[in-house]
Image 1 (cartoon, rainbow over the protein chains, first blue to last red):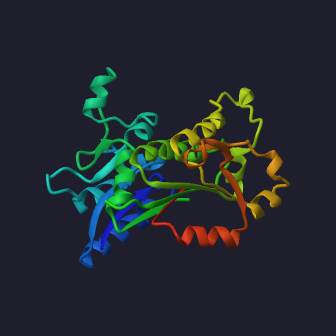
Image 2: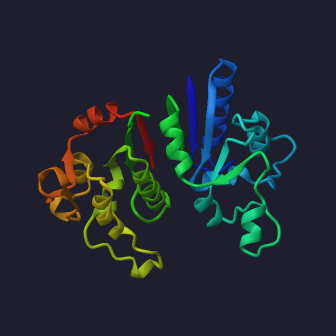
Amino acid sequence: MKFSIQINEGPYQHQASDSAYQFAKAAIAAGHEIFRVFFYHDGVNNASRFTMPPQDDRNVVNQWAELDIKNADGEPELVVCIAAALRRGMLDESEAKKNGIEGNNIHPAFRISGLGQLIEAGIQSDRLVVFGD
Amino acid sequence: MAIKKFMYLNRKASYGTAYAIESLEVVLIAAAFDQDVSLAFIDDGVYQIVEGQNTDGIGMKNFSKTFHALGDYDINKLYVSAESLEERGLTADDLMPLVYEDEDDDWEEKPSVKIVSNAELTKIMSDQDVCLSF
């Protein structure tokens, strides 16, 4: 089955991203496809490459990165909503440059894009599973 | 590609958290994808379409007027939980008079809001292809 996942909550404060990760990992192990993971609301914070949890804790961001969810063109399908990201101080290289800001914090295993990608995921997938409050 | 039924489930009040406004942003984008879109308002979500909202005191943008634009985007199925209204002491008269123009009926203006019981809403939800919950 072709799944997409929407994550509405940030890491560590809330278990949504952890649960979604466990779900994605289990789905892939069972031979299913993850078409796209879409990070919305505070969920955009799951893409910060500056995330530094203590050594004995899981790294939520790296866990997602290691799942290595990509499309046929090799682009990441861990997609961060651009509007939600920018208003929360999450920028990739191109958005930082565009806004005249030094530095960027989106992990390279993720990409920034628009809300249309969420709707498209709903259209293209057999199931869209939402994780959040 | 076949048209899918998308339902946006609004469960939170307009302010206090970003869920309501960020849900509305998705709904407006979704309108461009020519899908069958409906909205449901349950729990505190019913406050989102209460008439006469005023955000002057909290320094936030009042986005409630945006709901009036939904009709122009062919989004005219807004289901409101009767139980959620009643639990909060609200009635249909407290809600914004949201309307759309029915192109199949000489562009007659018709109400978009439909108050339904939770049991009816359950049925409508089970009929959807995609439910996005906010």
